[in-house]
Image 1: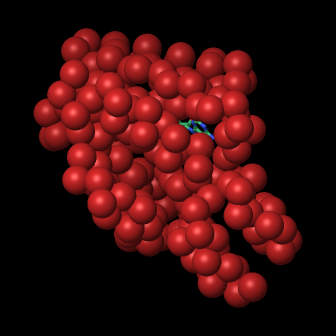
Image 2 (image 1 turned 60 degrees about the horizontal axis):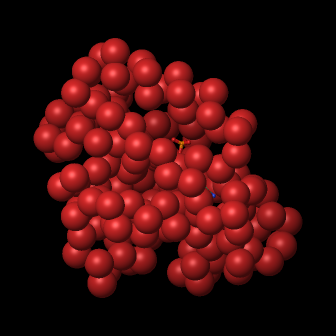
Length: 159
Ligand code: ADP
């Protein structure tokens, strides 16, 4: 496989997401991290901030590209001319939703395939929402996110 798209909100990117990108890079030559622009989700970090943070973390990895999209994933896939989608699976609870999305996307665009990667068990409980919740109350998030993200979280939350 040449390339794959890893779509998500990444608000902010966590060690779990990073683990998935690293695993994907051992399967494909290029990973396009597709950051979703969805103002209705009311993200903590703006689209530009989320993209900049990801770019900073992968500044030494030319095989990772960061792009944004809104609307349908299949339209972004067509634009990129990349039809392999990477999604991470943490627990069985992720499966129902991911299954539904993958089948819907395949229905809308038959050449699209979704590849699920299981994260390291260390990150299997980790989500961006959990990280934000812990950070908001002044908890230590250093084992959940890289230092750059930890600093940005503190700055954003005025801690
Ligand atoms: P979305 O809003 O699309 O779920 P997220 O940024 O929350 O976006 O997640 C993007 C992808 O990364 C999803 O496939 C999600 O299941 C996966 N993911 C999130 N956290 C982890 C983690 N800790 N380990 C593995 N995969 C994860």
